[in-house]
Amino acid sequence: AHSYTKYNTWAQIQSWIASISTSNKDLISKEVIGNTYEGRPMTLLKLGRKSSFAKPAIFMDCGIHAREWISPAFCQWFVKEALSTFGSDAQMTSLLNQMDVYVLPVFNIDGYEYTHTNNRMWRKTRSRKSGTSCVGADPNRNFDAGWCTLGASSNPCSDTFCGYSPESEIEVKNVANFIRRNKAVIKAYLTVHSYSQLLLFPYSYSYNLAAHHSELLKVAEGASAALRSLYGTRYTSGPGATTIYPAAGGSDDWAYDLGVKYSYTFELRDTGRYGFLLPESQIKPTCEETMLAVKYIAAYVQKNL
Ligand code: 0X9
Ligand code: ZN
Ligand code: ZN
Image 1: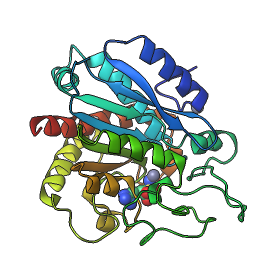
Image 2 (image 1 turned 180 degrees about the vertical axis):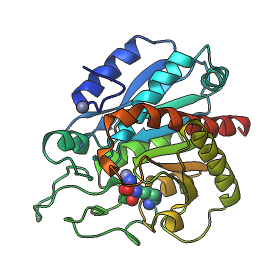
Image 3 (image 1 turned 90 degrees about the vertical axis):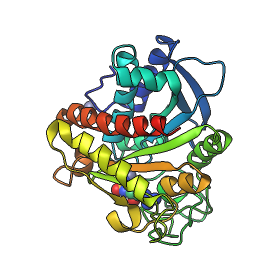
Image 4 (image 1 turned 135 degrees about the vertical axis):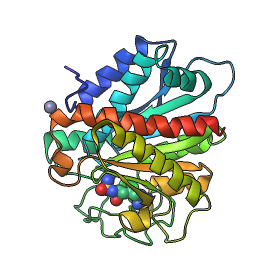
C-alpha cells in the first residue's frame, strides 16, 4: 500500500495519483503529458484553486534520475502537504489561491521501475536504439541547453550519455513541450534530485553567471536558511558549474534560457553516508525541511509576480 514515509513503487504511485486527484477535485486535477519510452503515462498534477483565467504557475518535477528515490518521495509529500494545509496554513492558502503548482511526481518512470525490479543504481531512461546494446540516456543531459558540450558523454554506455540529439528521450520531449506550451504562465521551475544537499541554479553548461545571478543566489540562500531552521541541515547554494560540476543539457539551464527566471535544482539529503540509499526513516525529516525551502521560493516568486 502507498505510504508517504516509504519508497513507493510506480504501481503504488500510480494508484495514489488516481485516488488523490479524485478525492480533492476543487484543488487538484491531472493531465497526461505523454507516455514514456515503455508506454507508461506521465501524469502531471495541477494544484491550485480553480480559476476562470490562467494563473501564474510553478512547475516542479521529481525523479529525473531513477535511483534518487527521495526525490519522488518529496513530490508526493508536497502534494499531500499542499492539500492538507490549504485553508489552515496562510502561506499555502495564499499560494494556491493566486498560483497553480504543477507537480510531475516521477519524470523517468521507466528508470524508476527498473531500480525497483532489476538494478537499484540505474540512473538513465530505458530507451533502446539499434547499433548498441547499451540502454538509455541521461535525461538531465538531454535538454537543449549547450547540449553535449560539457560534462556529458556521447558514449551510449555512459551514465551521462547525452542521447542522440537534444530531446531524443521522449520523457524530456514531453516535459519540454509542456513547459514551452505554458511558458507564458510558468514563473518558476524546480527540479528535485539527490544527493549532496545543494541548491543549484544556472548555469551548469557554462561558467558565465546568469543574468539574474545575484537575485537567484539571494533567494537560494534564503531558502537554504529556511530549510536549515528545522533540523540544522546545511545546504550550499550556487551556480551548478562551480558548485557541483560543469554539465550541459540540464533541465534547469534549459528552463532558464527559455525565460523561466526562477530555475532551481535541489540536491536533497544526504552528503554521502547513505547517498542514493537514504533510509526510509529519513523521508519525513527530509521532506519536512525541504517543504520550507520550496515554500520560501514560492513565496518570493508570488511576491514578485
Ligand atoms: O548531474 C546532474 O544531473 C545533477 N546531479 S545528480 O547527482 N542528481 O545527477 C546536477 C544537475 C545540475 N544542473 C545541471 N547540470 N544543469
Ligand atoms: Zn519500501
Ligand atoms: Zn539527479
